[in-house]
Image (cartoon, rainbow, N blue to C red; front, top):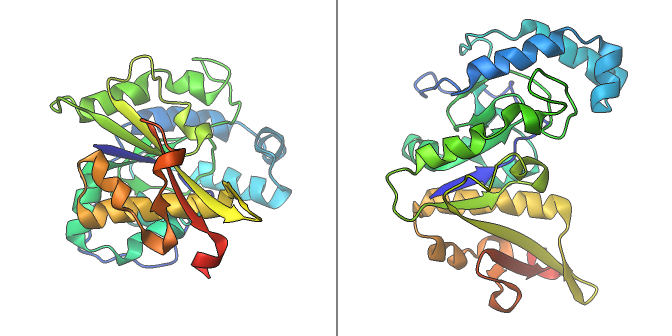
Length: 261
């Protein structure tokens, strides 16, 4: 079973990583280098328009692209699961995972990325900004969905080729999951949805849902879950599986706003 996560815009390269923590090479590093070559040719003003960035952020990312190297090292990169620092990763709290838990995550967690395509938790990540929805033209098409084509789905198939009942648990946003070509994906896809009860009704609140996705991934890592049904036992931070609101492949977890205070 594979769990999909979105990346984060915010990055943490300040918190030190233990010298004994292993690292790995992203599987599509050459495709990333191809995209970096295109991004390097953009001026900060062009990047600001392309990605709807402030002048300061556009300049920062122009510097990042220029500094990016094909060979990542602990000096210019960091393990991806520790470098990402947004709402999802606040819920995941990867910095508190031990080496055994990180090793399990390495086999079961896949982070989708506009630049790298897919990342395993211990893949070395260099600082960047490139959201999957960016309309960056390449030789393969007008946007990153066309650039990545069927690579991501093919990669997920390979990860579970020996599993007679492959399953993908989607904890990624729709912007990122759209890069997975479901027409060629061999696995069953289960989408986890997290809702809050507020003013008498349940609804998805974006930043809470993102954090819950990270908590769900943490739950799976801690329990070493490889059977989908066991995810229904998730009760972190007041959430509970809502059978009446769920369907076969769309599992809803709910809580009241009051329960999380």
